[in-house]
Length: 362
Ligand SMILES: [Mn+2]
Image (cartoon, rainbow, N blue to C red; front, side, top):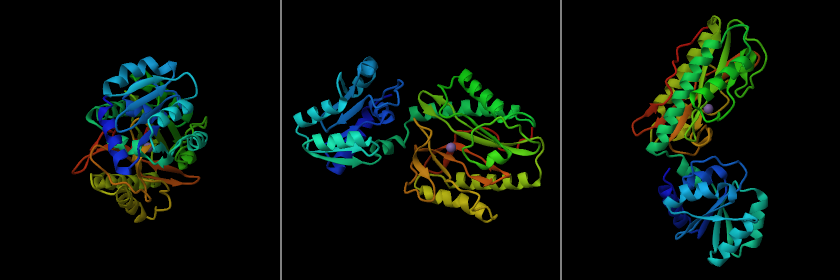
């Protein structure tokens, strides 16, 4: 990936905020700004220091060669640090005479404390600077997400075919995961969720050894990863034959999902798209049953900006990738959720998920 435009975006932000330098430490953000395609551990072993005139990525021996090969072309100099990273960063900031340093607000408190105490200048918490740049995808990123969405569609079809009364949630979840890995997913962004009957009333249930009962709704939520980028897809099917209540709740959820999809386009406040879907469920007396937001951004992480809930402050922009996933959850009975992944465009949105949405009975 070309890291140069990302660097330019961060320098624009530096100028806007009148900050002399910005320190990136979140591992996903470090990979993003440097255009690094490899796999970082989640430990904060690397950091990036961005100033108007220089871009330095500090790392250790394990990532040095890969970063030199990938980040150098977009203007980064790679510094291999043997000792503590904080110490070296403070030395460099002092040597460059930088007065105000922005650090990511997600930085661990210990590092923030060290920097505050050892830097001569001022330390500011910079909130979501990289995350905001990440929320708008390039054509290359969109292609990777679309490929991940395609793998998710295939795995969903595979999983749905296995749903049957008497099968356990775990059996289906394992089959889905193996299918994803065989089809080329780089690991899985999250363990697949298969939740039947009462378990489906919990949006993030863990697959259990409970056997699916006849007529129960089964929520399947899964994702794939391609070229570092994630997808996210949910369908609800019925083990056996659906009764009137399942059909009614499914129709309500689908109507809310379609209204949500129709509301998503560039320029719309994310909370307004959420409100449109919420209204559809509210009109059917299901406002209380829809307890989470309409969706979330997807990219290098399966949950990223923009958030699409009632409290969201983001405005949708062309190039964002979001999920649209209303659900209804009735304790002790179960739940229904339908989730598609879409790319936000000027006049609307483009579906990246293609899995069918007619209620499947197995
Ligand atoms: Mn989701």
